[in-house]
Amino acid sequence: DGSLLSYRLDGRDLSSSALQPNFWKVPNDNQYRNQYENRLGPWRTAADNRQVNSVTASIEGGQAVVDVQAVLPVGKSKYNVTYTVDPDGHITVVCDYQPGEGKLPLLPKFGMTLEMPRQFSQLRWYGRGPQETYRVRKTGGEIGIYQQAVKEMVFPYIRSQDNGNRSDVRWFQLCNDAGVGLRFASKTLFNFAAWPYRAADLEKATHNYQLPTRETTTVNVYLQLHGVGGDNSWGARTHSEYTLPGDKPYRFSFVLSPVR
Image (cartoon, rainbow, N blue to C red; front, side, top):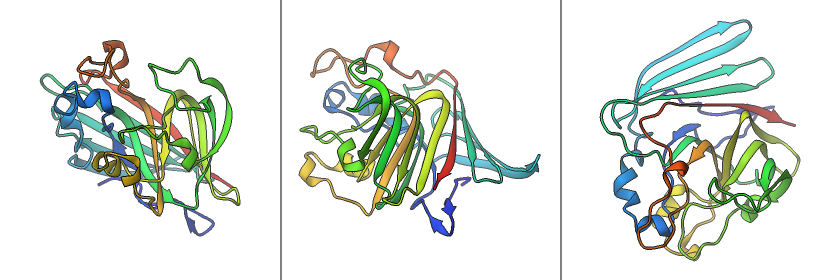
Protein backbone atom coordinates (compact mmCIF):
# COMPACT_ATOMS: atom_id res chain seq x y z
CA ASP A 1 0.00 0.00 0.00
CA GLY A 2 3.00 2.30 -0.35
CA SER A 3 3.62 2.69 3.39
CA LEU A 4 7.01 2.92 5.06
CA LEU A 5 6.97 -0.38 6.94
CA SER A 6 9.87 0.08 9.36
CA TYR A 7 12.82 2.24 10.30
CA ARG A 8 15.92 0.47 11.66
CA LEU A 9 18.90 2.09 13.32
CA ASP A 10 22.03 0.03 14.01
CA GLY A 11 20.02 -3.17 13.73
CA ARG A 12 17.23 -1.99 16.03
CA ASP A 13 13.70 -1.42 14.72
CA LEU A 14 12.46 1.94 15.97
CA SER A 15 8.95 1.48 14.58
CA SER A 16 6.22 -0.97 15.57
CA SER A 17 3.87 -0.13 12.71
CA ALA A 18 3.91 1.37 9.25
CA LEU A 19 3.93 5.13 8.74
CA GLN A 20 0.38 5.77 7.54
CA PRO A 21 -1.66 8.78 6.40
CA ASN A 22 -4.02 10.12 9.05
CA PHE A 23 -7.10 12.25 8.43
CA TRP A 24 -9.23 11.49 11.50
CA LYS A 25 -9.43 13.40 14.79
CA VAL A 26 -11.31 11.73 17.63
CA PRO A 27 -14.14 14.12 18.59
CA ASN A 28 -13.98 16.10 21.81
CA ASP A 29 -16.95 16.54 24.11
CA ASN A 30 -18.19 19.67 22.30
CA GLN A 31 -17.97 18.00 18.92
CA TYR A 32 -20.05 14.99 19.88
CA ARG A 33 -22.91 17.48 20.23
CA ASN A 34 -22.53 19.36 16.94
CA GLN A 35 -22.82 16.42 14.51
CA TYR A 36 -19.04 16.32 13.97
CA GLU A 37 -19.10 12.55 13.42
CA ASN A 38 -21.77 12.81 10.74
CA ARG A 39 -20.36 15.89 9.04
CA LEU A 40 -16.69 14.83 9.00
CA GLY A 41 -17.25 11.09 9.30
CA PRO A 42 -16.24 10.09 5.74
CA TRP A 43 -12.62 10.84 6.67
CA ARG A 44 -12.61 8.30 9.52
CA THR A 45 -11.69 5.38 7.25
CA ALA A 46 -10.31 7.33 4.28
CA ALA A 47 -6.70 6.31 4.94
CA ASP A 48 -7.52 2.60 5.36
CA ASN A 49 -9.66 2.57 2.22
CA ARG A 50 -7.37 4.53 -0.08
CA GLN A 51 -6.65 2.99 -3.46
CA VAL A 52 -2.95 2.93 -4.32
CA ASN A 53 -2.53 3.19 -8.09
CA SER A 54 1.25 3.13 -8.36
CA VAL A 55 4.46 2.81 -6.34
CA THR A 56 7.66 3.70 -8.18
CA ALA A 57 11.26 3.80 -7.01
CA SER A 58 14.35 5.39 -8.51
CA ILE A 59 17.86 6.55 -7.62
CA GLU A 60 18.46 10.26 -8.13
CA GLY A 61 21.73 11.92 -7.16
CA GLY A 62 22.60 9.23 -4.64
CA GLN A 63 19.16 9.31 -3.02
CA ALA A 64 16.41 6.71 -3.21
CA VAL A 65 13.09 8.25 -4.22
CA VAL A 66 9.83 6.34 -3.72
CA ASP A 67 6.67 7.90 -5.13
CA VAL A 68 3.23 6.64 -4.12
CA GLN A 69 0.12 7.78 -5.94
CA ALA A 70 -3.28 7.02 -4.44
CA VAL A 71 -6.94 8.00 -4.57
CA LEU A 72 -9.03 8.57 -1.46
CA PRO A 73 -12.65 7.40 -1.23
CA VAL A 74 -13.77 10.92 -0.24
CA GLY A 75 -14.58 12.61 -3.54
CA LYS A 76 -11.97 10.50 -5.35
CA SER A 77 -9.39 13.00 -4.12
CA LYS A 78 -5.76 12.48 -5.10
CA TYR A 79 -3.26 11.70 -2.35
CA ASN A 80 0.43 11.33 -3.22
CA VAL A 81 3.38 10.66 -0.92
CA THR A 82 7.04 10.89 -1.87
CA TYR A 83 9.84 9.46 0.29
CA THR A 84 13.36 10.67 -0.44
CA VAL A 85 15.98 8.65 1.44
CA ASP A 86 19.54 9.91 1.65
CA PRO A 87 22.62 7.82 2.60
CA ASP A 88 22.72 8.95 6.24
CA GLY A 89 19.17 7.77 6.94
CA HIS A 90 17.25 11.02 6.61
CA ILE A 91 13.88 10.52 4.93
CA THR A 92 12.05 13.52 3.52
CA VAL A 93 8.33 12.76 3.43
CA VAL A 94 6.10 14.93 1.24
CA CYS A 95 2.31 14.46 1.39
CA ASP A 96 0.16 16.07 -1.32
CA TYR A 97 -3.63 16.28 -1.30
CA GLN A 98 -5.68 17.46 -4.26
CA PRO A 99 -9.44 17.72 -3.68
CA GLY A 100 -11.73 15.66 -5.83
CA GLU A 101 -15.31 15.85 -6.92
CA GLY A 102 -18.41 17.31 -5.33
CA LYS A 103 -18.91 18.97 -1.98
CA LEU A 104 -16.26 17.58 0.33
CA PRO A 105 -16.53 17.54 4.14
CA LEU A 106 -14.07 19.40 6.33
CA LEU A 107 -10.83 17.57 7.09
CA PRO A 108 -10.36 16.57 10.75
CA LYS A 109 -6.55 16.31 10.36
CA PHE A 110 -3.91 16.29 7.67
CA GLY A 111 -0.86 14.29 8.63
CA MET A 112 0.56 10.86 9.36
CA THR A 113 0.80 8.41 12.24
CA LEU A 114 2.97 5.49 13.35
CA GLU A 115 3.72 3.46 16.46
CA MET A 116 7.06 3.03 18.23
CA PRO A 117 8.00 0.54 20.95
CA ARG A 118 6.97 1.72 24.41
CA GLN A 119 10.56 2.14 25.63
CA PHE A 120 10.77 5.17 23.32
CA SER A 121 8.97 7.35 25.82
CA GLN A 122 11.10 10.50 26.25
CA LEU A 123 9.98 13.50 24.22
CA ARG A 124 11.84 16.68 23.43
CA TRP A 125 10.42 19.38 21.18
CA TYR A 126 10.85 22.94 19.96
CA GLY A 127 7.48 24.61 19.82
CA ARG A 128 4.71 25.77 22.12
CA GLY A 129 4.46 24.25 25.58
CA PRO A 130 4.78 22.81 28.03
CA GLN A 131 0.99 22.19 28.17
CA GLU A 132 -1.15 21.10 25.24
CA THR A 133 -1.97 23.79 22.69
CA TYR A 134 -4.25 24.03 19.66
CA ARG A 135 -4.66 26.56 16.88
CA VAL A 136 -7.67 28.03 18.73
CA ARG A 137 -6.05 28.01 22.18
CA LYS A 138 -2.30 28.44 22.10
CA THR A 139 -1.35 31.93 23.25
CA GLY A 140 -0.75 30.61 26.78
CA GLY A 141 1.93 28.24 25.49
CA GLU A 142 5.29 29.93 25.09
CA ILE A 143 7.68 28.86 22.36
CA GLY A 144 10.70 27.05 23.72
CA ILE A 145 12.47 23.70 23.98
CA TYR A 146 10.65 21.30 26.29
CA GLN A 147 11.11 17.76 27.53
CA GLN A 148 8.47 15.40 28.93
CA ALA A 149 7.68 11.71 29.17
CA VAL A 150 4.88 10.45 26.93
CA LYS A 151 2.64 9.81 29.94
CA GLU A 152 2.98 13.50 30.87
CA MET A 153 1.91 14.63 27.39
CA VAL A 154 -1.68 13.44 27.66
CA PHE A 155 -4.45 15.48 29.27
CA PRO A 156 -7.05 13.57 31.35
CA TYR A 157 -10.27 15.07 30.09
CA ILE A 158 -13.33 13.74 31.92
CA ARG A 159 -14.55 12.27 28.63
CA SER A 160 -11.88 10.46 26.63
CA GLN A 161 -11.07 12.43 23.50
CA ASP A 162 -8.28 13.63 21.24
CA ASN A 163 -5.72 15.35 23.49
CA GLY A 164 -2.11 16.31 24.06
CA ASN A 165 -1.53 18.32 20.90
CA ARG A 166 1.50 20.63 20.71
CA SER A 167 1.34 23.38 18.10
CA ASP A 168 3.74 25.66 16.22
CA VAL A 169 6.39 22.93 16.39
CA ARG A 170 9.69 23.12 14.50
CA TRP A 171 10.96 19.67 15.52
CA PHE A 172 10.42 16.93 18.04
CA GLN A 173 12.18 13.70 18.88
CA LEU A 174 11.13 10.56 20.71
CA CYS A 175 13.93 8.57 22.33
CA ASN A 176 14.61 5.78 24.81
CA ASP A 177 16.60 6.22 28.03
CA ALA A 178 19.85 5.81 26.07
CA GLY A 179 19.01 8.76 23.83
CA VAL A 180 18.33 6.68 20.71
CA GLY A 181 15.23 7.39 18.67
CA LEU A 182 13.59 9.30 15.84
CA ARG A 183 13.43 12.99 15.07
CA PHE A 184 10.72 14.75 13.06
CA ALA A 185 11.42 18.22 11.66
CA SER A 186 9.86 20.58 9.14
CA LYS A 187 10.49 24.02 7.67
CA THR A 188 6.74 24.59 8.14
CA LEU A 189 5.24 24.94 11.60
CA PHE A 190 3.38 21.76 12.43
CA ASN A 191 1.61 19.83 15.21
CA PHE A 192 2.25 16.56 16.99
CA ALA A 193 0.87 14.40 19.78
CA ALA A 194 2.17 11.22 21.43
CA TRP A 195 -0.03 8.78 23.38
CA PRO A 196 0.55 5.54 25.32
CA TYR A 197 -2.59 4.20 23.58
CA ARG A 198 -4.25 4.34 20.16
CA ALA A 199 -6.89 6.57 18.59
CA ALA A 200 -9.25 3.57 18.53
CA ASP A 201 -8.83 3.29 22.31
CA LEU A 202 -9.89 6.92 22.71
CA GLU A 203 -12.98 6.34 20.63
CA LYS A 204 -13.95 3.21 22.54
CA ALA A 205 -13.43 4.63 26.05
CA THR A 206 -15.70 7.11 27.79
CA HIS A 207 -13.43 7.65 30.82
CA ASN A 208 -9.68 7.57 31.31
CA TYR A 209 -9.64 4.48 33.52
CA GLN A 210 -10.86 2.54 30.47
CA LEU A 211 -7.79 3.50 28.41
CA PRO A 212 -5.17 0.73 28.18
CA THR A 213 -1.41 1.20 28.36
CA ARG A 214 -0.15 -0.27 25.14
CA GLU A 215 3.25 -1.81 24.44
CA THR A 216 3.65 0.92 21.84
CA THR A 217 3.62 4.72 21.69
CA THR A 218 1.36 6.29 19.09
CA VAL A 219 3.03 9.21 17.32
CA ASN A 220 0.84 11.65 15.40
CA VAL A 221 2.48 14.26 13.20
CA TYR A 222 0.34 16.60 11.13
CA LEU A 223 0.31 19.89 9.34
CA GLN A 224 -2.90 21.04 11.00
CA LEU A 225 -6.11 19.81 12.62
CA HIS A 226 -9.70 20.91 13.03
CA GLY A 227 -10.24 23.38 15.89
CA VAL A 228 -11.29 21.97 19.25
CA GLY A 229 -14.83 23.34 19.47
CA GLY A 230 -17.41 26.07 19.25
CA ASP A 231 -18.56 28.71 21.71
CA ASN A 232 -20.61 26.33 23.84
CA SER A 233 -20.99 22.63 24.63
CA TRP A 234 -24.39 21.96 23.09
CA GLY A 235 -24.07 22.38 19.36
CA ALA A 236 -21.97 25.39 18.39
CA ARG A 237 -19.49 24.57 15.65
CA THR A 238 -15.86 25.54 15.33
CA HIS A 239 -15.34 28.94 13.70
CA SER A 240 -14.61 28.51 10.00
CA GLU A 241 -11.15 30.09 10.20
CA TYR A 242 -10.07 27.19 12.44
CA THR A 243 -11.23 24.43 10.10
CA LEU A 244 -9.63 22.57 7.18
CA PRO A 245 -11.88 22.85 4.10
CA GLY A 246 -11.91 19.63 2.13
CA ASP A 247 -12.04 21.46 -1.20
CA LYS A 248 -8.57 23.00 -0.80
CA PRO A 249 -5.19 21.39 -1.62
CA TYR A 250 -2.73 20.64 1.19
CA ARG A 251 0.96 19.86 1.19
CA PHE A 252 3.00 18.76 4.20
CA SER A 253 6.72 18.03 4.15
CA PHE A 254 8.80 16.77 7.07
CA VAL A 255 12.10 15.00 7.62
CA LEU A 256 12.40 11.77 9.58
CA SER A 257 15.93 11.22 10.88
CA PRO A 258 17.83 9.02 13.36
CA VAL A 259 18.89 10.19 16.82
CA ARG A 260 21.91 8.56 18.44
